[in-house]
Image (cartoon, rainbow, N blue to C red):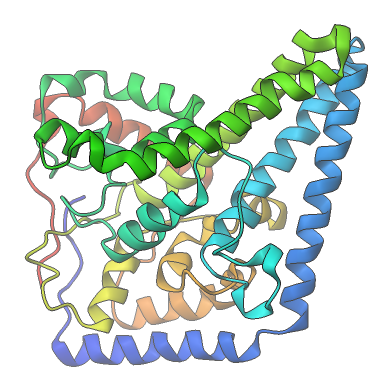
Length: 362
């Protein structure tokens, strides 16, 4: 993540903040029935896909029905995770006053408890985006994904760890909240994790019971077929979420920062860090829907509490602002972004893959 972006003056940072604040205000002032109808429609589609998927698994003795059931269930879980769960938990629809879509009350169909996520993702990641040593999502304490991270022999397995993490991503996200690196360093004690552990055990227990015991049992002699179908749908959702998230945060061109760089950070400097620390993925409307509109990761990091369906609308404005301030607007196809992520994982697995700490000077 070599720093190539020109440094802005204090006056430019202030103007950048004003312009992006204005973009956000225009969208927030325009929120209304169309946004409410949209998210309720997505919820309805997600529920119908789940019903269809689970129903088709009752016909699992027919391979086409089993495949269709798994596909429908996987699509349901992807929508629940990406366009509904992630975005609702960001408070994007709190203004509606609907308790079913309120960030403080919503629970999603993965093993990570929403209460833990609100702290580790909404607060830590979105406040300290790409600040080495502060943003725990940089490598998820498992991978070396930034050259500023110190290399150890452990990182020789970097690509393998990434592959395994993609398959069990919901579990990786859940266990990430335990902050294992702080337990190992002695910064935290096991007792300090009591609340987090209790919520993980309760939520993961319910998810395992639902997908790997209750629903398979309902199909009687097709127990193993249904269990395999549910597991396949979960893995498909995990791999998809991993790909979208990693392409939005770690492809070539995304930059990292130090705590010193971000001391006394202004609003404009915070926006600057969000733009330089994120990347977009090109695609069609269905692709954007299935990505939870995190294919517009730059816009999401600028305005995490704005309904994600609006990101495509404001992307041209954000891109034009980047052009005028001579800032990069990192975007590319899924294959391009994912390819650079994989290349980086391989390069940083070895010590000579570290060209030096890449930080953004102010």
